[in-house]
Amino acid sequence: MEGVFGYKFLFALVVVMVALIMSEEALAAQHVVGGSQGWEESADFSSWASAQKFKVGDQLVFKYTSGLHSVVELGSESAYKSCDIGSSVDSLNGGNNVVKLNKAGTRYFACGTLGHCDQGMKVKITTVAADASDSPTSSSSSSPTSTSTAPSLSRSFAPVVSISLIFTLLFLVLF
Ligand SMILES: [Cu+2]
Image (cartoon, rainbow, N blue to C red):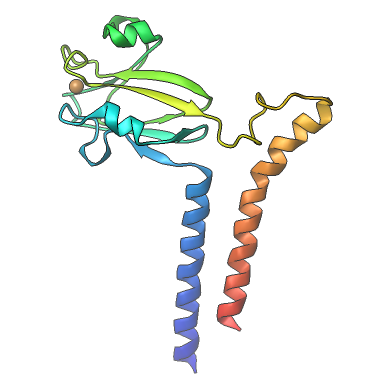
């Protein structure tokens, strides 16, 4: 009997972990720039970026050989097009950088190593609102109270659903 319980408990644990991972994924995603190739010259960043959907709250992960490359954020489309590294708004190095996409809009990244940007080591990231109904900018506010409570309610909704789902599954499996 103890063995059966142990098996069931293990199964429940797996279910809980999978549910947690799935709910985390639904809330925010991590995008490894360049996919499996990472932030390296060989990767095709424009086709990689066009296949991704960047939402507010998501993260960009730059993985590269430290010392060989770096990450430079550029402030404008023109600086991005001309690879004007000198006009950078932010500079990162070390081989593993996480950049949070905290608002909707377009951001420009390039490699700071001489010549790399001109060789195509740059990427343009366009971030969209996480959810159309969740976006405070898309909905016109009629009353100030509704706008302040609406985003926090919808944001807490997803974890509540996943937690209740976890407990339901746990209950079904154990009893
Ligand atoms: Cu580089």
